[in-house]
Length: 247
Ligand code: SF4
Image 1 (cartoon, rainbow, N blue to C red):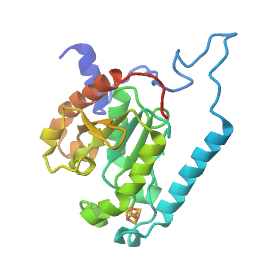
Image 2: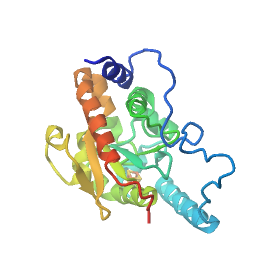
Image 3: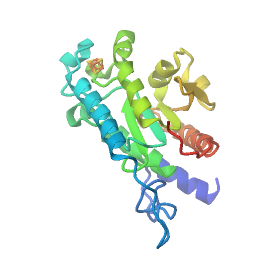
Image 4: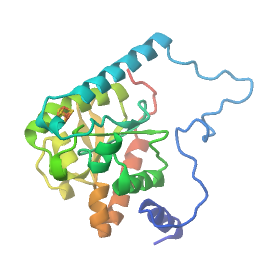
C-alpha cells in the first residue's frame, strides 16, 4: 500500500499516528478559498428575513421532535435526538437511530462509534464542526438498540425528510444496512448497495452507502472497505457541479 494511502487509511480507522492538522474544507477559518483578498468585497450574507425564516423552521422541527409521541419509542427515551453539524452542509450523513449515549447526550454519533465516524469523516476532510450535517432515521432510541420497526420508521421519516429539505445537501451518505434499506426502500444486502450512486427524494440527491461505524468496531476487517466507500463518495461529490444553487 502506498505511503500516503496507508497514512490516510490509518487515520481513517483511528489508529494513533500523529499528523499535522488537515485543513477542513468549508471551515471559514481554515481554507484559502474562504478568505477574500484584502480590499475585495466578501460574499453578501443571505437576507436576514430568509435566515430568520429558516431558523424558525429548524426551531419548529426541533420542538416537534422533542415533544413527539407519534410512536411508542417516546416512552423509553431520555430525549429526542435531532441532528448535529452545519445545517447548510453539502454533505449529510444519515444513520439508523440513537444509542444509549446519544439518548443521554442528545447528539447523534457520540461515544466510540461516533469517534470512529469522526475519524472516518476527517480522513476525507469533513467535520461535524464545519461541513457535515449528521442525523438518524429515528429520533428516539429503540430499547436495547434493537432494529427500528417499520411502523417507527414510517412515523419518524417525515422529520428526516424535513431535515433534508432544510439542509439541501449535495450528497447523502447512508451508514449501515438499516439506514440504506429504509432510505432506498430496498431489502438488498449492504454489499449490493455499496459502491454505486443511488438517488433519494424529489431532488434526486445522490446517495452513497457505507458501513455503520458501530459495525466497523465489531468487524474491523471491513474498515478497509469503508475507506474505499469514503473515497468513492468523495469522488462522487467532486463530480457534482458547484453552482451554489440550493433553491
Ligand atoms: S422515534 Fe420519531 S416518531 Fe417515534 S417518538 Fe421519536 S421522534 Fe416521534
